[in-house]
Image (tube, rainbow over all chains, first blue to last red; front, side, top):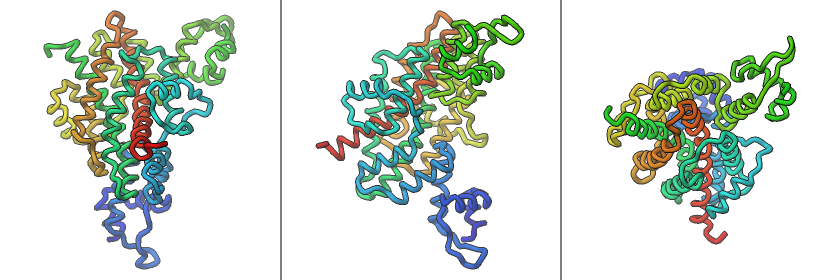
Length: 203
Length: 203
């Protein structure tokens, strides 16, 4: 199909498609003349993926490029796959954060995690901010949040296909990223439900 | 104290403090001359709050200003407090999203939520993205995530003080916002632990 048809099929303007081609997010079509190229279903699928990453997954073009690179060049072992998927999308932590409290929490929980990864520093930053802001924690403290997330992670790792590494990368990256806004909006809606029942039981 | 001492106490550069003063995030000090003002502990505390909001809570200066306005001018009832806290910090959803699937999920769960709030549209956007990207869901699907978040929300609403509305706003806003990065980083670390145990049990 021509670029105009690709635009119609994907719902993405031609100028934006050309931008993705220039940035290397979308692979080139097959040249049919000096100024025209032919595109196929792989381009439609890729544009759906790009839209998912740049939209609700809230990645920048640069971050989306890193994720697509993991998908295009997946690591060899499944454990490295998950690691690469995570580090491609983890927000960069501030450089001077003390990982101590996060490490202590991991040790209390006996979790085996990447000690030099950005996720641990991200947690340390978040724990520090919660402490600095002096917010009240739920009973059980941070361990309660950790247990809830671990129970979900057990089931999430089950969804990663183990036979095809590219499929595993795709599921790990997108499953991690795209469920994040689902979790956060469900948490806020759950808080609405709980507070409505508690403070306005008759409405 | 002078602005230089306020800077030392808060760890925030003088130029940044002056920027917060201009933007109205920080209340003015008491003028002691035409060019100097005196600051107190309330300014140190406020700067800690601003840093928490702009740092790990990842708000823009404009969003932080909206949150601080809820804290400075809290609504009258506790239910309105939580609602205002949420809408001050909810990401703006795209304008043309169909709330249908999110509403259907809320009805299956029998949750009482704001039907015209941004959170429901946020959920609808996130559900759509997950569906478009064709990721595999955990067993039980979105209901499983909803139940996990509801169990946490029950305990989170317990942490909101009911005697002082300003304290309730502060806890609702900061508890919602500051726990978000905690949840997301714990989820990624839990996925690391689960996949390490599953794919590298001997290490």
